[in-house]
Image (cartoon, rainbow, N blue to C red; front, side, top):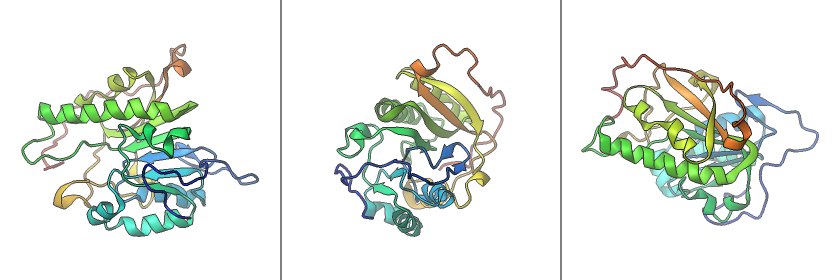
Length: 253
């Protein structure tokens, strides 16, 4: 199966469940769901899901960089892209999460799960993660993502954002950003990297772009749904975080 170029349709509808197949689940995702993964690093997370599902025909996996730039930054992506291609995944490169709903292929799709793992607006050698200017850039990224993602979400679908929620990262205020765009926090659950064999989170920028970064013990999956789906539900699950003592000095430089 050929990769679909950014802003061009591959001519097929993705995410259709194969009749007669057995549903397989990987934590919070199912092979019966239409899944969009955005901001992929080396595509190891997508490959993990596809491998366990035994097929990726229900998946669309995207990167911000074009394919050439992606392979320069994340040379480990090559094998994962090949594996995903063989398993039937639709691969898109050069997709900006802030306007992905305008992409000629994606705009006609609706997804049951939209997954953005550890979003980051980019590194600036003059700024540290605790600096207000960089925090504002991260918040702008999330604002744009939620605005665009909700346009691609199925009626009962969920947006999953994996994020460290301590120290300066807590001030990104993911929940408020989502709620301002017509979404509501449905649940927060611990993100356990061991649940996704073969997944390697990536920094995404600079000479260390293909290196991982520490996830600590306060990484969570924030699950959001369209506000109308839960506006009458008063028992939304929450996890409260009070301990902000973790040392972030070695996280990102």
